Structure formats: C-alpha cells, structure tokens
Amino acid sequence: MTSAQRAGIAIVVLFILLIAAAGGFYYWQSHRPSTSPVFAPEVAGAPPDSMSELPPDAPVVGYMDVATLRKLQNFPLAGLTALVSSGPQADRQYAAFVEATGFDYTRDLDHAAVAYWPAGSWTPANVMGKDRFLAIGDGRFDEQKIKAYILRTGKTVTRGTQSIYQSPGNPPISIEFLTSTQIMIAGGTGATELIATTVSGGPQPRDPAMAIRLERVAGAPLFAVARTGPLPQSFYDAFQNAPQLAELARGVKALTLVGEPVGDTLNMTLAAECDSTKNAMTISFLLEGGRMAASMALSAPDARKQMTHQQITFADQLINQAKIKQEGRNVRMSLNVTPSMAGTNRSEGK
Image (cartoon, rainbow, N blue to C red; front, side, top):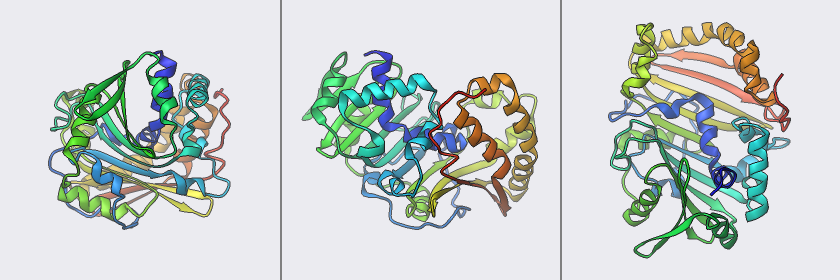
C-alpha cells in the first residue's frame, strides 16, 4: 500500500493524535498508578460501553464523542484535528481516502475509544515494547469500499471466525468490522494479533485506580487518562545535564485530559498528579516561567517553517492564555479553544 493510502486509513484514528497533541502525555507508562484525586474538572459519568472492549492493561486510554463535538456552534471539528496535521500533503492524502471510501470522520464518525501503549511499556498486550494503539469507532462505514481500499495492496488474515484486513507499512494497520456500524483498528507491530486477542478475549476488568479516574471524567465528550511511572532510560537521557527535571519527570504519577463544551468553545484541561506537593509546586513554577522561553522558541524562523499557520496561532494562544493552577500534589493547565483557534486556515506559517 502506498504511503498516501496508509495515511488515508490512519486518518480514521486522528483523534489519537488529538490526545497526544494536548500534552504529549502518550509518552508515559507505568505499573502502579497513584490513587490520589484527579485535579481536573469533575465531569463524572459511566465510561462508554466501547471502552470496556479495550484491553485493560493499556497505560493510556481516551474517548471522543465526535457527534457531540459536531454540535458546537461555529466550531469546526476538522480544524481541531488539523492542528496535528503535517500540512497540505496530509490534506491531499485524506481527500483521496474520502473519495475512495466515502468515509469522512467529521461527518461519519460518531464515537471513538482508544487504547495506547507507548514504546517501552511492557504489558501483556504490548510484549514487544513498541508503540501500538487500538481504537474502536462507531459511525457510518461503507464496508465494501473500505475493504477494497485496503486490499489494493493489503490482504485478509483469518483468525478463527475473524476476518482481519491487514495493510503493510510503517506502522502496519489492521482493521476488523465488528458490526455494520462499528470498526476496530489497530496500528503497530503485531496489530493483527492485537485485534484478534482483544475480540476473542472479550471485556475484562480494568485496574481499579484507572477505573476511578475514568469515572471522574467520563461525562465529558473528550477525555483521556494516562497512568505514568518509570519511562525507558532513553527518555531520561535527555536530562543528563538537568537532574532536577529528570526527578520531576519521574515524580508525575498520572495525567488526565478533559475537553468540555462551553458555549461555542471547548475548554481543554490537562491535569498532572505528582508524588509530592513540592514537585507539583516546582512544575507549576516552571510552566509559568517557561512561557517566555516557549515564545522565543516559537519565534525562531526554523520552528515556524515546520508548522502551519493554524498550529502557530494555536501555540501562541496556548503560551499566552493557558491558565496554570497548583493545588496540593496536583497541577492543572487549562485553555479555552475558540472557533478562531480551531479554524480551517491551513496555509503554512511564515
């Protein structure tokens, strides 16, 4: 399958990148999450049914109610996901995918649940320690067209009674149609096996601490929870000359992302649970003090050339308008994403 075709399939799960873009927290993973309260907006609710189908050992899980976000007045959903697009080429690839399959996530995807295993997270579902994801999407799919699109260069793999459609590439993508309105997509090494074991294994109980965190935010149309802990040594190598930052990184126990509609804006909040009040205060201080450094870095011509105009606008607003608050062992950063910030201006930054 060509790179354009693979990108077309991958666009179905662009919401995964949305979660990642919100804070970069998908790099984190752990084994023993803290049970301290999540310092994030309390939007309590029962997790959607599709989340119970996700492997329970995933260190990062998230959910997006696309149908609800579509209802935001004057809020361009396509613009929100465009913030993580790589530019015009990605737009053309996605357009080709839509033309071939008839599927447009801004129109046809209603709900999506995601599980993510970052590189270095050794869990039963990620024995290879590589980046992997699994997503379950509900919506309207032209099954025959999507299958034909994959089979241009991909193949069908049978696992018992399951028919899984496999696309080679980097990363490889595998798809199974669970029903006429529900699809499962996996990406990364062993994607086909990940789908096969997930479907055959059925729902399994989730880690109690993770379940508590999810219940506190599952009433929001956009949320994600990451339990954290010791990262691969390669991550800490970047802090060889900054041992204090390495200590702070090791002290973050969990991260929670929540997106709540408020009028025609989307209030995004990223909350971190730390192992001590001292570390939480230090992180809050560094975040506040880092605004100027971030602004200077963003103003560098080389940095702006690699970003779209929309991404630059969003970054400027994040630096200048994000609110940072520390309370006890928790730190919260929030930002109101307005229609203008999530606009559809895709010209390149200059």
